[in-house]
Length: 461
Image (cartoon, rainbow, N blue to C red; front, side, top):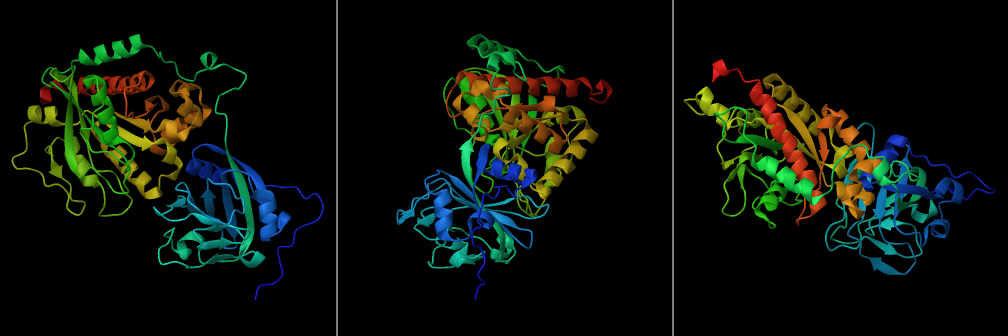
């Protein structure tokens, strides 16, 4: 039996959020740069279903945040209003989350084809599976009513199997302004300067066409893309290829699968139009980095790729690192096959969710590349998904304080200078603003390859 707890307080009790700034920031990143406004606090309004609905009905998208005595902060998001309609709600944006200690936030998306929740007069639930304030008490209850689960989770991982709640809050989720200063127009205060003109696009394309590696023995510089699964490595090549082909192309497999769609080492030259000559660079694609050992790109394989030993179409085996060929290439041969610049590709919507294991892998890669003198930069993708202001107009990218904060964050986490972090949008269509960002990033990559080749001792070639 549950004790009689959770009665509403009387008087005008202050409604103060229990979220720390750090956890709030992590949750906002999960949601995509949205504002949280506290609607309901069980210790103030009561744990009764009626109190919950009085505060939360018809408020639009909401985030439920529960706290237990074991230090877990967990809950769920729904993009559909609570309305006591008596209907089963379809919501493909719904998810469960959990934050505990120093671990990266856990996010569990709804399974395809499942109902997100029941919209009745009862307590809030997710998937008719996880009930909060169960029986009007400070309790979370996991009930398996159906064979197919809307959310696949382990109660021990989600909330430490501690079902008693110390608090339950519900937040209204809203878009927020991301301009540096709402009183200042975009043209007056950008944090980076860029020209958004067709002339600038044409000039960038011509500079790239006319680029020649500083070392004559290298006909095409090689740029390696490294990043977590789904960050947009293959999409970047497709976008660059589309610009120079003058039409949308999809030569490299890309998508948002949970495991890497790229299973081979691929080298992608780009032609200047269908019948045009090859451009002076090659983009190299790899498997995505993954947390689990024995999955994704192996750190040892990266060393072999950097040194130019791995052939095109080589299929990665995470369990067995690449074996060096015998005999090894001469220095002149290897210089043409080596990687001359490394680009880390990071999803702007998931920077704060990069796990400790992935961050450790990046650090290990960085140490290796630094010892070899390989220049490195970061391509921060999906900026339109991270910031509503940028989604509305890509030219707002350098007046968005949120994008600026993401650039600074990824700079800190990957130990790469802020000036070497370039935000972009991989595009499914040819678009002036998008093309300018992509071409600007590519031009910087070419500048970095020259820096590397300029340092090569001619006596060793």
